Length: 237
Image (tube, rainbow, N blue to C red; front, side):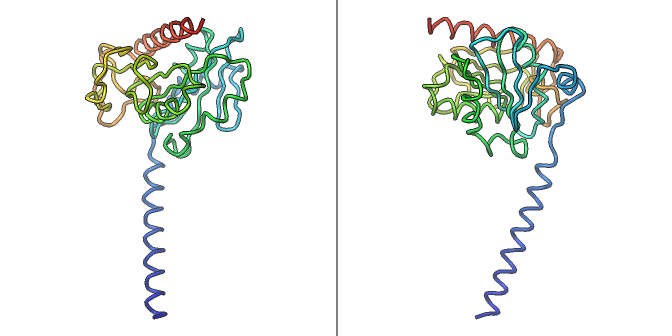
């Protein structure tokens, strides 16, 4: 009996070590932010780090903020160029760094944000790809706190209605499952855009080739987000 127990323990430990090694290899292979994204962090002294949060505050404080979850296996600062455009238009942006660059491990990260910015009245959740799915899941459970949802290369998941969500994806996006975007309200397709160009991290495996520049895709995305937020905020008046 003792020998059997020993063999079993050795087998279980071996399996756990092997699984840990495989997981370690998987999470160490991620998409790193490019120099443009790194430059935003380096050159903008108004960007504030608070633990796993990166806060981009507009020069003139406003009452609207976006909590943003990064895409799966993407270095979080890759989204700074896009969020910087929103900040310049008066939106406070809170970018969340996820464990192992996977939002599924901290889908409730928004919980820690609300009390840190007491002046915010209009809260939005958003995310890219896997981050969008986790943001959608969170927003659907906190509709009393979240005014609207912003999805980039993702689709509505959970109890949020399309009326309260903005869905943006590129016509050449070969990563998102477009059959899941089976609704039309607040859906915008960026002609020539792809999956990866919402962030600054280079090409993504399995993605289509974009026929517009990254700058063009992000500028159109920022415009769509600002229009959506303006419309939703007006509803609350």
